[in-house]
Length: 252
Ligand code: MG
Image (cartoon, rainbow, N blue to C red; front, side):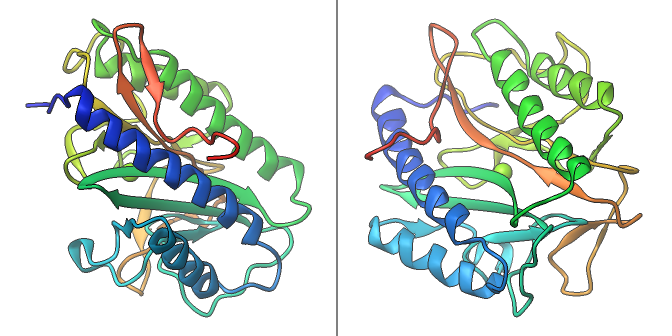
């Protein structure tokens, strides 16, 4: 069953999503050459607490950090540590908040300084896939319409689509049903209804789609060592179509 949130609940999720988006803007700015991923993790925790929110990944399934930071061939769930960022790296920042009892989830991939054109294009295509997936969100469409739109764009660019990790419902918990794969067929899967809150998150690579777990026990990385990118928004299905709840709004 896919949970339906009430307008009051959605208002709280929106309030959390705006805070998450504002924090993410600051984290993007902080991601520069020479900083360690642990320093970004500390900042993420501080910024969350300043917003009267909790970092929702901390302790989730035992995850020992505030935020997931995944560098280059690391795709998701990257465990922050003493690793320094370098010019040319591409860095996935995936952060979740618990605010007023509700969960939001968001990810971006940023380049450190000047990155090469192949890496830039991978990041742009992953962000475009996210937008194309979100465009399919409206009452009466199906989860498969989102999956197919993401997958089509990724394949047209020749990118690998990570298959063993998916988007998901969100709001009352960090992860809720349904799973939202980044490939699939239009019309498949559950029908979208007003009040469903979904985390859409394409994960693409320059190579094959196979991932492996790093020795830290948390970080998923590409088995073939290829560069990978990840973008994510929390989105609610509305009468008119959808609303991105983690969209950055200047001044908030
Ligand atoms: Mg997620």
